[in-house]
Length: 192
Image 1: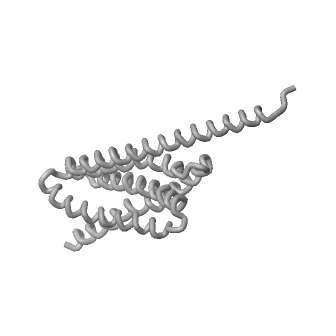
Image 2: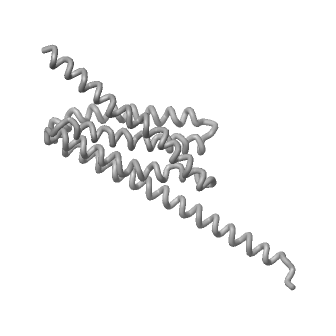
Image 3: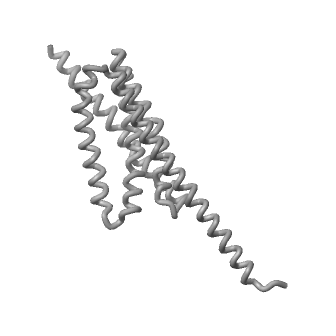
């Protein structure tokens, strides 16, 4: 009996490590990545989100699928923890870019905007937990989390395409402005 209690506590601690360590490593990396993107494109606030969103598009659904099907197929807990690590790492890489973007766009209300994002994350987490309790009983872990991963892919891909379009429009506008200013300069200079 004592061995089972120690094992359960140990597994719980490992589960927290599988979620916490990738967050501890991924968050600073996400901030560095976001800052580099912003430095490359200083006039485009959405640039902060480009690389972070792409990484989230790859890691978070992959982690959800690994987590779900490892639970569904009752495989070793290493698979479950690997899925948790990938999902946590993707989320930790994405959030610094999001908060950097909010700070850039709404400097006077950055705290309120960040608090709104955090609140929505916690509310949606609560809703998903409530729905997941019923869904995993009826559908099973694999199909339910596969559905969530599919929703994640669609929403994140939609956001990523929007970011890329905005960057292309900004780049085209900057190029047109450069061409326009060079034509003005050539028109003003006296001909020889």
